[in-house]
Image (cartoon, rainbow, N blue to C red; front, side):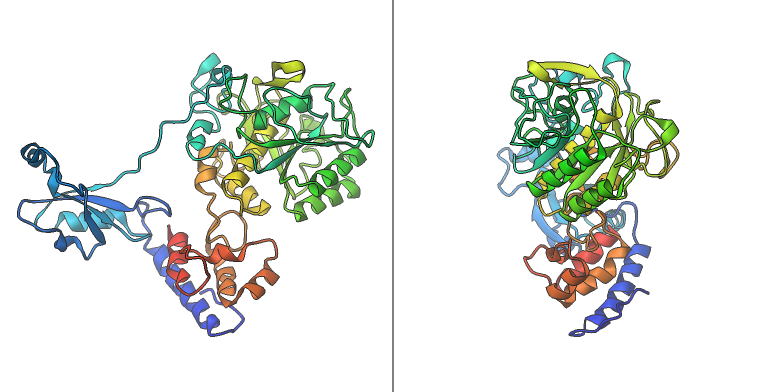
Length: 476
């Protein structure tokens, strides 16, 4: 049994109780139980002459049609006026409820009130049909569905221009498809972020080209502030110190996510220190694993504070140029990727740099969709919601799998994630109990997390009324 070692206002007693309650709920959990955020409701059709009060012990009951249907005889032919919607509690066992209701006298039919969504959002950007990494329909011989599921995620959110993504690279050339904010050049120590190479402009477009503007391509997020930080020359060369200066400049000037589609193999204390500095500032750092297998995964991706990204092709297969190793976190599309290029052009390239940009774009989309997420929560969500590829579970080629934008946004609610690792599980119990004891104690133990993550019933405060909702999140 999980318990807490502290005692304040009787909270230690509740720690043991919560632990026992959660164990019981988890033991009784069923694969059909309602997930947090799911509709959790049944449609029940009663036989003629029976009233809905016989359903009241199951959950809240309302008629499906609040107003009489105009053609009563035709409605009765299909029993439409005898349908009622029964809302189940969070964490309810759907299969058990259906079986129990079906056995009741006067119940003709019981069905799940299945969720409905908008059709996958397709932008009007003319080159969208070529962007298989976002939406793979089998174009050019690919495997349908071997993509990051962007249109389905865009049904939920496309971006709102409130988040800044730093492109720490060769600069970004002004382009009609890119929304830029001021940046910096660490090579010359000035504000000239002209991209004479094209690499930075390409990765910027993959992550954040303007969407649904009738121009060119579209990024993972449609509306984002792209911050060019030029630390690599037009010839493609930089140093760990120029990269380190760029990371600090981006963190100090408001970047919430940093894309590092570059590699080095020294891993100096300076570079690591700046990565740690930015991470402590709350920045999500997304880095390329590199393409030199003989030297293993490159820095800064090798640092634990960075998300290390590898590449896949249009069949969800590992790209042969993508380095593999023990530090890899996730993979993303990286073969034959069309994106923005200097002078208003568009071009197609392959590389781990392209894959890295998909992941940083999704990190920005998450932070735009759910602004209270911490950087460690974003990282955890990206790992936890990836589509597993290769051997089951984590492996050294695919990491946790290819990122899935829809699943990531569906898991973007931070409530219940009290230790800020991106998932709600048994490791959150003691942190939840600490949050119940008060904000001061919780923030002292988890300074980078939000106390209101414990507001599991979303009432606006953290109190004992949150316990049942927390347990439902755990068991769901």
